[in-house]
Amino acid sequence: MYPRSFEYVAPSSLDEALAALNDHPGAKVMTGGMSLIPLMKLRLFSPPLVVDIGRVPGLDSIADGNGHIAIGALVRHAATASSDAVASGAAALAQAARLTGDVQVRNRGTTCGALAHADVAADQPAAALALGATMVARSAGGEREIAADDFFVDALTSALEPNEILVEVRVPKAGAGTGSAYDKLGRRGGRSDYAVAGAAAMVTMDGGSVSAARVALTGVGTKPTLATATADALVGTDGSADAIKAAAQHAAEGVTVLEDLYGSVEYKTHLAQVYAARALEAAIAAAG
Amino acid sequence: MQVSMTVNGSEVSGDVEPRTLLVHFIRENLRLTGTHVGCETSYCGACTIHVDGTPVKSCTMLAVQANGANITTVEGLADGDNLHPVQEGFWERHGLQCGFCTPGMIMSASALLAENDNPSEDEIRHGIEGNLCRCTGYHNIVRSIEYAAAKMRGEEPAPPDWTQDFEGATA
Ligand SMILES: Cc1cc2nc3c(=O)[nH]c(=O)nc-3n(C[C@H](O)[C@H](O)[C@H](O)COP(=O)(O)OP(=O)(O)OC[C@H]3O[C@@H](n4cnc5c(N)ncnc54)[C@H](O)[C@@H]3O)c2cc1C
Ligand code: FES
Ligand code: FES
Image (cartoon, rainbow over all chains, first blue to last red; front, side, top):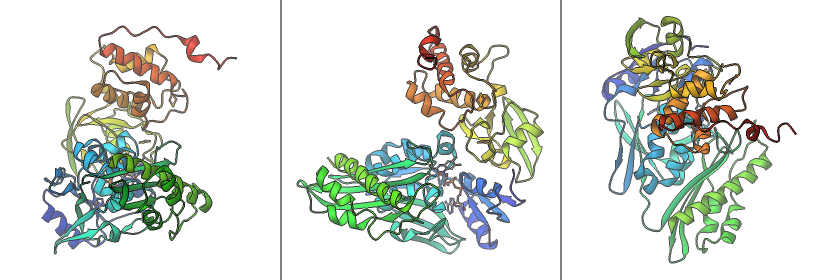
């Protein structure tokens, strides 16, 4: 099984890569290739040109900055999963990266690639959404920032233009009293493979009560979605097990839940509630 | 396109189409057929090789992406006639039946043990999560990797207790 013929370039600078994308409508960026190559082998995607940015220098670092952690376009899932900076500042993203695919997939696939790919059942998009991350997109025309809330548009569709490269994702660092977590039910049982459903949560505790919360679901609809009713119901409570349980009942409220091969609407709604509760519980425990 | 890389310590090169998958370059151009093609859909791990020291699925990489890389396939693990401890473990602990998954299992296991030569059973099972076996039920694969880990730590592997392992299955 191999893809249709295509042209291939592996530019050694970002400007060259951006120029290639600009000059060739229909061209596709490749980073890890862990989603693009399977889709090309199945011939669901047949781009005339693949722009492999894997050799562009300067995109493979995790920068622990002031207020946020910046993860470059070529940082692989394995690096995000094992980074101390990500684990302490943005735990939900580290956990989501750890639960992405298998060892070999995590050694090639990239965090930014998973965000740009915007699969309906991917892990790191939900974490990025709950954490309120910012995507930094570059084109030949310049750079712009896209909030996670506006980034995930539809199934396999992000807000990136075809000539843009996601050069990094910036994740706000958790301050004192803030914790985050991610958990899912995987398609092969346990936590392996894409999510049947999963949830990421970020919670800030202040003087024994929840002062802020964000919860994002994956796997239940066409894109990662904020469970705002749950977050709203939790704020102002003491964050106890009872409060979490009550708030999590609202997880699917206002969310378009869709049936797929892995579950009915009823089952996915139930899982949304269960995983919202689990993610909230772990996030509150981490908030300390 | 012209590609060159180091495979099992030798410099190799070839002329490939951009769509040539690394596994096909290895099997068809280099005639190293130890690396298997199982599912072709990135799931089974039979095609696992080491690229610059890390295990990856060679059916999900283009040969052109590996230009300049340092690659080890299952043929490159043994030191002459001396099997790699993981290879020896699969022999000693019956880690295979049909053997189709074995090259990939061995490449994942050897990468795992290179990082941690004293993994728990849980760590071993997670370390081979990207490799599917249709025959063994994984049990003897885990035992094989435990054997190799002991060898790599310089210890004598505990003798196998087949009765204990299969207790309950025969009742
Ligand atoms: C066996 C297997 C299991 C998997 N399991 C999971 C799982 O459990 N959870 C999960 O979330 N994912 C899973 N994945 C997908 C994996 O996470 C991919 O790595 C990820 O979706 C894409 O990242 P990549 O770097 O490989 O991107 P590529 O495959 O290189 O690209 C994917 C798409 O995103 C675009 N793109 C990539 N990077 C950029 C960029 N920087 N800027 C603009 N566009 C870009 C490409 O043009 C392409 O359309 C699995 C994949 C496999 C093969
Ligand atoms: S053949 Fe590569 S993963 Fe199955
Ligand atoms: S021994 Fe047959 S697939 Fe593993």
